[in-house]
Image (cartoon, rainbow, N blue to C red; front, side, top):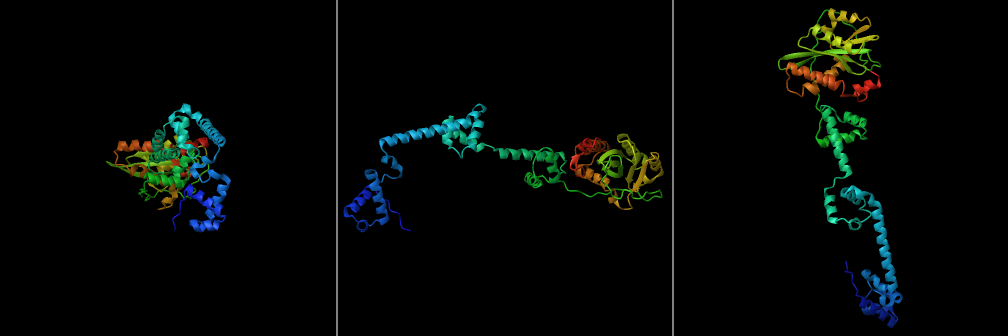
Length: 388
């Protein structure tokens, strides 16, 4: 690629004079070894501006007359005054709010005005502004940090058992507009992973000669009113000194544990009867009630059967033999309990277990935990909506 030649002003003037003297651009092209197009261009400029020709890009003011220079100067001052007015007009409301707010105004207007222009008008040091800018946390970054804190807080409140779906619903309830995918990305970046589910065994003694009821519930777990269907189950909890046995009674309408009892023996008097007595105290039976359980002896024996029969309006239902999914909601509660409390802790003493179970059922599960079956509301929120 040929190197571009630079021509001095004097050379251009002499080239034009030669063209005019000989009357031929073609001859001047041969004599000066200069492109004919340039000679034509220089000749046009010379005829137009005369001695003020060929001033170059940075010396265009040399072509202007004194009057034109004065007008140019006035125009420049007017432009500067207008620029100063616009910056002051936009930035004046931030003066009383301190330098950080003025700096934020400058940051938001860097594409409109230069930093030096704004600093001159606002009487600020450009270097001070640049130092602030290098340490500035944007509103987007601030929102992200606040969202990270909110997600981490919900994850902790959910006993590290809430995944992206539940956390998203909690955020929606708190006024955030956010997708499940975004929440999932935040959880990954924060290194928060939902605790994995562990299987457990529920002991049921169904080897007896007592009467067993048919499976009337038939896995119809969605109930339209409170006090219509209760389900019950028993599980064991290991402690430092043997086992404790937890019996629960749950209303399918709002998933609330309305009755429960923790005992050190599996007798009916220490399991199902005290749990039932608590349930009828917390939620009165006002109409027909379907009571569903497994076929365990604690539910099938004559002592508990007579107790239920005394209420006249209670219909019995029992899971089919060896089919735990017939009582899936009660089983699900025990799964939640063991995964959120038991499996993530060291073994408790009897007293500690009693305190932990009370805290889990009464203060966490029945009040604060959100439930997918209740459209991701807590039992208390669902109860308020339904006047319970």
